[in-house]
Picture (cartoon, rainbow, N blue to C red):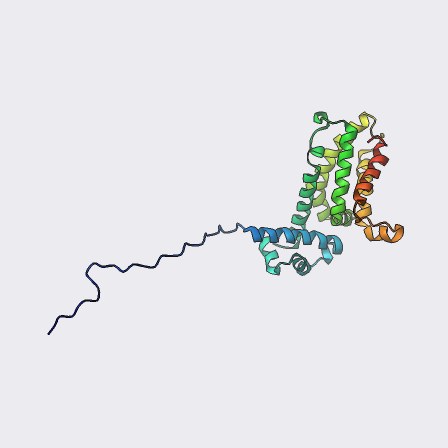
Amino acid sequence: MKPTRSRKRAGAVRPRAPRAPAAPRRTPGAPGADEAGARERILGAALQVFAERGFDGARTREIAERAGANLGLLSYYFEGKEQLWQAAVARAFGELQAELGEIAALPAAEAREDARARLARLLRRFVLFVARRPEFMRLMNDEGKRDGPRMRWLADHHVRPLAEGLRGLFEHAQARGVLPPAPAASLHYIALGAAGLLFSQAPECLYVSGVDPTAEGFPEAHADALVRILLGPGA
């Protein structure tokens, strides 16, 4: 009887197929580019809905639909509507601070340009910002008209720090005759209303005057008009 041959040689190892490289593991809690983009869309949509409906009338489902996001993604990023509101407001003020930049942040004594030129630049940038973000002014007007926890949170975290920075700029301009002697609060709200009311109430403006504040070139023209009215023709 013939001995059977072993199918494998002793010590022989069959070659294995090469493994595909493992996909990189994501750190828990670190969103990828798509998720980060979704979060930004959610915050942008939230600001619009809160400005249009008010806090109580806003619905997270509508915010998710406008952002093109799943409703569950809102719960993933934000614990509730209050936190979503705060994040949307903080994002808007972050954009405003980036727009105004060193104009508002730099102490008047350290500014290289004179008070008139600095104020003119600040007013123009603010007008262009609220022209692009009319929902910002709508939300501010809505929350500022009633005393409540959201108004106080908004004032303590964002409005008061900005107003205190601008107060020094106004006083510096008043000392040099650029602005008339008026209370800082008056100047603050005169500038806010004159800059942003037109854009937050664009439908009324169009209906009453026939002027569309969203038309190309109008925000720049409005900024120039505001600067001339507040600072004179030489600004």
